[in-house]
Length: 274
Image (cartoon, rainbow, N blue to C red; front, side, top):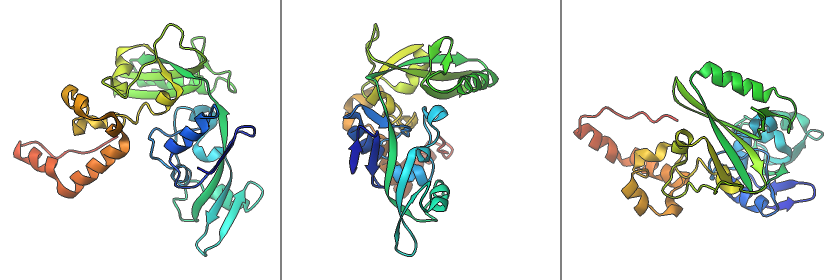
């Protein structure tokens, strides 16, 4: 993390800066990146060269669309500054290039102001056609901040499907105060994805909203036992995060302990899918 300009609403960031570090720096100024991918250890350079997406993308696009300038280490050893007016071909082609055109060592991105809370509505749909129609209606609802659903503003759009006849849109909007709701905390015993089914409305601080999926690696922490009530009480909060689960999966891939237990129990091999 190199610099935050709260007046110009920009940040200068090195390519391997994680979004966790980036968000910590920008929230201190009441700002956030226009798009913040779901997991804390995703890097800005990775989200640009490999593409990323999140619940503000319907109004702010993908992470690379808020990049105004970047320094690229090219294959011949030069560092080239690229923007819409300087080395414009490289600037336009760099997103989704996966390092084939060079390595981003510095990026300048746009920021947007935040409010303290994000108020959520979990709207159930019994058909995917209905959900898709609602997404289209919201996304085509005019320029921000004019988008809304059932008369309420929409600044964030997220979706989860539990089965073909049970899916949800989570629609969020900025809120300056908590109102009658007490902010939820899904870094403790409660689990975010389960709350989508259990409650129609919710409230999170902006930081907790941005990292709502990281604590349980979406829902994949269940495969590691982190959602079992007893294990969860014993599992330190600082270790309930996606990069810890990644390391545990890497150990499993190397040693295959769970796979051997499954074979002994007569269970089929697991396929990991998100």
